[in-house]
Amino acid sequence: MRVRFMGYRLHSQQLWLLLADVAAAALAYWLAVRVYPAAEPVVTASLDRRFPLQATAFAAILVAASTAFGLYAARQRSGPTGIGVRLIGAVAVSVGMLALANVLTPRDFLSTTQLVVLAAAAFALLTMVRVAIDRAASLDVFRSRVLVYGAGRQATSILSLRRRVDQRGFLLVGFVDCGEPGGVRVPAERIVADEGSLLALARQLQADEIVVAVDDRRRAFPIHDLLECRLNGITVVDLVTFLERETGKVRLDVLNPSWFIFAEGFRRDPLRMLTTRLFDLVASLVVLLLTWPLMIFAVAAIKLEDGWRAPVFYRQTRVGLDGRDFQIVKFRSMRVDAERGGRAQWAQQGDTRVTKVGAFIRKVRIDELPQLFNVLAGDMAFVGPRPERPEFVDQLSERIPYYRERHSVKPGITGWAQLCYPYGASAHDATEKLQYDLYYVKNHSLLFDLVILVETAETVLFGRGAR
Image (cartoon, rainbow, N blue to C red; front, side):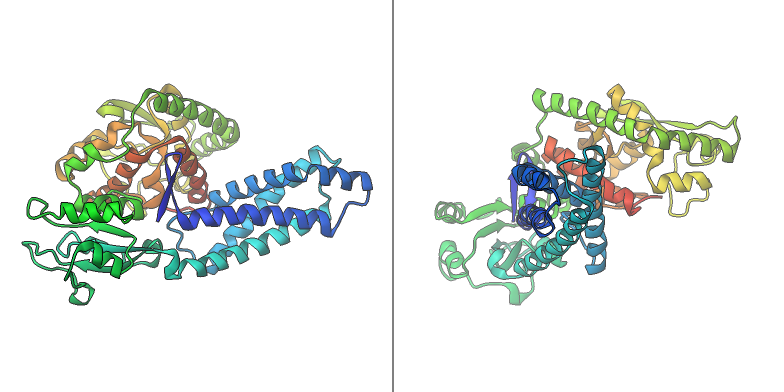
């Protein structure tokens, strides 16, 4: 199950993990101060006095670093080794920032020994937290019990969520056969007998939630039964909303146009647009200040490889907000003659058109940095769907329903689809990524943008999805 906080949907397990990490960080800080107290009593007294503020600051830094290393990602599929590496990285960055503060303000701060104790304690406690929550999450008592009303084609979409990470928030207790014209598509052993009322069946199965997944609602629809369940404390949701909540994407195979009209979200109010613009300006300027040496390196590397007369930047027409075209700017990572004849081509895995320097700057996303100027100019946002070329947009709009709806927000340098799905280079990939883009369009908020921005660091650090 997911909870909504400031417009961002957070899985209940993620929320408990985050809160436990905050407590673990504060405990680790307390152990570092108490196990090896400072040599000077005055410093010890100062640390005791400032403990609440400094422990809270360390917890905030650790949570941000953990987010950047993907430790709160809803689809974290790394094994124990991968999680351990990410934990070490998060703790190292957090303690390193405290060490930097120690250099700048040496008095009344943690000693080197205390920093080492803090790092060891934080790693140990965070590891124990993850083991405990992972085991607790596997218990059925912590999962929402879901009864599916329907056993036809649409109901089978829930059965397609086979991975453990996709079902960690709910437990399927059965499907109700409501006599759909297409027949039963769900395995017979998953069907539950509906001999009495729907409410009685839900209570018998101890269902917390009923998902309506019928193929044709124009036939006999159990309005009164569902209303009775709702008034008795059982949550009732439609299939699209349930899958959106649990998978982090809008499933096109079960989507209908009316859902766009009546679903919560899809906001485009003036306040949201203002906060987005302020966020874009601040984030772009901060990233520019931090990455200008990398941009100079990229310019020099491109010139050294291709000659001083070779162009550094690559400009290309892309489709932006409301379908308007604009010129995107990137560092050139392909040969100058990459598209002879002007015919648009998808970038492929191991594309021979990519230069040696281009392969590197693509891998670490340096080629995307000039898009910061597109953000400052207002053509792009920092976070949003990936901007595509007009030729591809025309082709994909004809083949994929609702494709143009992704242009109801500005395109972004990074985005939800870029985090959740690898680089797209086909119509199939575009369809998969559109489902994540529509989720972002529906649920975008300032907090969601911040989470995506921080989690993008993991994509860069571990080189996921680049071509």
